[in-house]
Image (cartoon, rainbow, N blue to C red; front, side, top):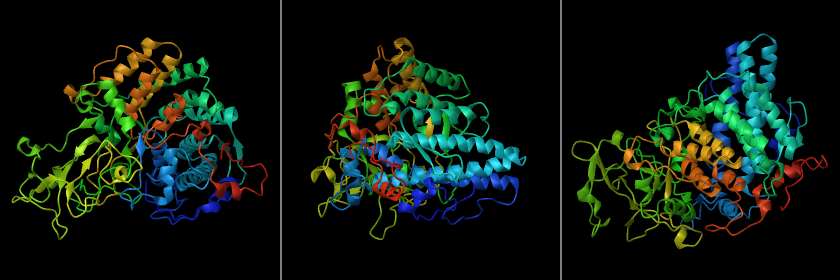
Length: 582
């Protein structure tokens, strides 16, 4: 798809764009118009603003992705060194479940989801008219936008307990909750599941992606019907989950033998992907913020591009790390499970012992790697990290053959005059000591793309939204809730033992399973993919205590509706009612 740049004129105006029928989108369009000149351009010009906004705004690290991560027991983002990532306290409040209707992270996510939904409504409207005029390609694209509306509404339902029913841009949206909301999303998905095809690849919504969304809907229906109560998992819902996951599993997909290939350059053709945000090429709206956000700001992950860096933001909570330790006991999880860690930065044995070595005396304590061959470790990063180093002039230090020197990475951000190495510690919290830039183990699940000239953009790694691993977990859960423990165990063991590229790190099959074990396994498989909050709520874990969070209010299962949206709808009495507890 061609490139589009969006100007943001958000606050209250976006509310009216989405809900009260305005069809003019404030944006600058590069290289294409929204309507185009020929039939093909009409289709691409209608789809591109939706898929582009989904990638660059809805699933931005400081939008829905970050909201899901820091609201859970998986990720924590303290005020780094007393100067970085405070942002009005929005990340801390969400993590503590103390957010208010003015929280910026919640508000930005609302804005981006609703604006993307408004674009999907407009695209569907245009494409429907084109299809009526005989454009067959527009008909298929229209079905995609119907599925996209359902997908975006499901994000809204998951976050705020409501959806927006709107068939064309001139209508005022109808807000639905509970069973009515479920029924609307279900009807949208069912209307296209048998007419969409699977020939457009994982970068587009396909029939199998819709089947996966239906499975998600039925699996979460117990929560969506009554978001504050005890979920009532009905057999008929679980049977439908099994029906749709069966259909996908029997299809052309295959579990990736190398787990981290799912999140690396070239993953667009990985046979496990079902739906992903297509980032092939070097478009202006591509990004790799899921990769750079947790990584140390002192690490240079792509030395052929010296401006690449991390940003020392989200870290893994000690609670989430402990789930791995509890599962594998005396065996280091890096040795026990190929999903936890992959060593790419292979340090020579004679350099591994850092006894007596410090930034003050380590000028010769390095090894050499061609710049384009250097890769940071993947998985969950612990302890001292290694990487390129710059001289005082900002130039990458090189070896005699022109390759890059790889040293222990110096902590320039918080170690002060007495420089130390970046040493990622288990402890990370909201105290002064626990908030230093080095604290907390780090997620390194996504590769820093070889097309990335800086920290943030031009990635060729597709951002994964639906893959076969999740499908196996959904089927396992539905089977387990239906009383089929053997079937659930078989699914989980298939998943555990499928990552065979590094045989010494393939975990042993489980001998028994229950809901707690399944919840743990979902964390091992799906961490840093934005699922944890959803799973915590469904498995009854969201009111628990973890690092920095003690609130147990069930009302916090839903986020507050932003106050600016409530205020914007105040002239329509009863149209937008704040969620309870706020």
